[in-house]
Length: 136
Image 1 (cartoon, rainbow, N blue to C red):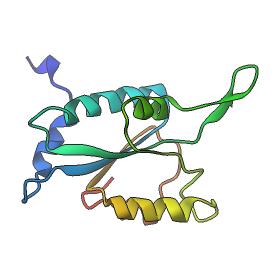
Image 2 (image 1 turned 180 degrees about the vertical axis):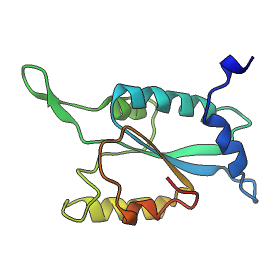
Image 3 (image 1 turned 60 degrees about the horizontal axis):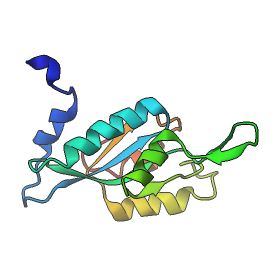
Image 4 (image 1 turned 45 degrees about the horizontal axis):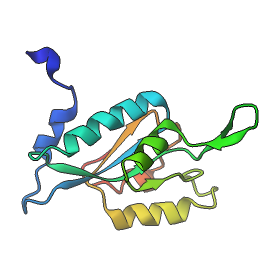
């Protein structure tokens, strides 16, 4: 029944490319709840009838954790690495961050059709929001 349907995933069926290529999606998130969303999107992208692929994953940089303050990747970064997906961890997207220009240039090169955000935790400037053709 309708209880088994995953809300939000069906939207991709409206994003079919005219040339038959899959749409490129960038996922942006950081905590465990976002990793759960990413897992669902990964599973959906692997289905033969899927109209999209995950072109990149973006998460906040690793943070110190535990008594020894060892750098720990976010749950989203860990999942993306486990799945072999390209992962980016910019310190920020605003111009004041040293790596923002390089990150934005990389996103323009990837040319995603859609960006999905789930508890990413950083401000998304117009310079990023204008990159995906179908929005964020």
